[in-house]
Amino acid sequence: MVSKKIRIAFRILIVLVLLFSFVVIGVIFGYNYVLSQEKRFDALSKRIDNGDYDDLNADTPGAVTVVITMGDSTSDIAEKLYDAGLVSNTFIFSLMSKINGFDGSYVAGTHYLLTSFSYDEIMYFLTLEPASVKVTIPEGSTYEEIKQILWDAGLTFNEEEMDECMNSTNLFVDYDFVSQIELNEERDFVLSGYLYPDTYIFDVNASPESIIRKFLNNMSYKLYDDYYARAERIGMTMDEVITLASVIQAETGRVSDMFYISAVFHNRLAQNDVLGSSATINYIIKRNGGRATLIHTSEQLNAESSYNTYINPGLPPGPICMPGADAISAALYPEPNCNYMYFCATGDGGTAYAVTLDQHNANVERYSSNWEEADRMAEERERNSHINEDGTVNETEATTNAGQ
Image (cartoon, rainbow, N blue to C red; front, side, top):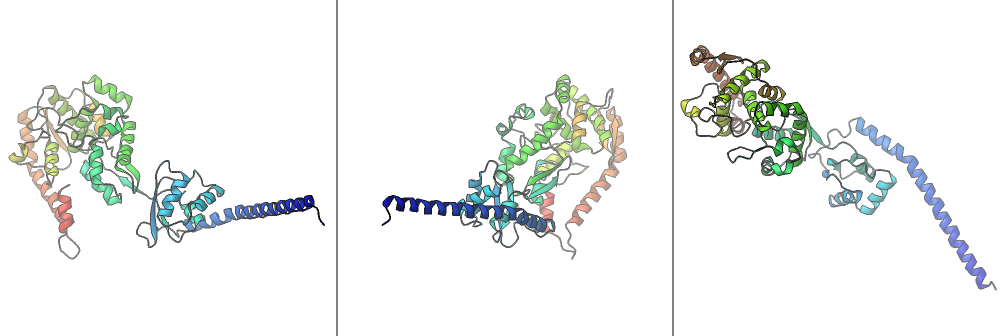
């Protein structure tokens, strides 16, 4: 009869052999899995390069939108995937993510995944660049126009939240130019003027705060230290500079004219006179759903508004559009030794200047017929843009564009 000690030793030996076998099997399995990993992901990468998933978006049948936020851990992501019905076991996903070496490689943003994706495919797609759109904001755009541009590009932000952020300077006090803005109840959207016109790439589900912060980041790079020193030297705050630049930007697109128009405005400011800028009249008209024109009625020129620079001396309460680099530079560095006090549009994109009121009135008489023709052509272009191929009028488009 086998002694008790031998039986115990034999059992221990069996357990050790089994454990060793499991370890060997595990090592072999893991080794083969790792060897096949590169092949699996290379094959997936080739399918992506071949364009197999170029059309994958929110409208693709079977597509699920997953948004990874900055700071999400692998377990956080696993929970989101589970809630979206893409994985059946969060532990297995987290384990495979660690084995595959994907931990810490997932990219924040919006990703579109298919319910048919394997765990490998899910992990790989979450390391790719998120769904984004490229947007160009033209110089002179208003805040309302920028919102429309972003919507047309496919961004999904909430308008009320965006408007609230535009008035919440406390969210952006880390920018010097924001912290220096003097709040004014008559101002339309405090951060108007600071969404720097440029080309941007946004995540399709970017939050209003992140959208505005991207604009402000760019603006911070454009406002050089020399600009602050120059603003102080000419007795202006940076906010006043941006406000003046916005009016200059809205008056002309010609860089050469910007510096002369700036000189006219500076000369008028020095005398505490009204700026008399038709751009501010058009701002009021567009804000009320109308269309910008060169010719304005007496009623429009005398409209009760703090933005009306025909009846209120000095600058408007805030910027009327988003000025570009040239307009900002012109506001800071007006044409030197310029004694012009008046200017008017020539109707063909140019500008005529005058020192005296009589000279200005002569220019107005000379070019007024050009204004009428320019306004007529602009109205005709707008009307034609609302006509469909079958000759019918797109009422929805006409209503929308009339308010821009």
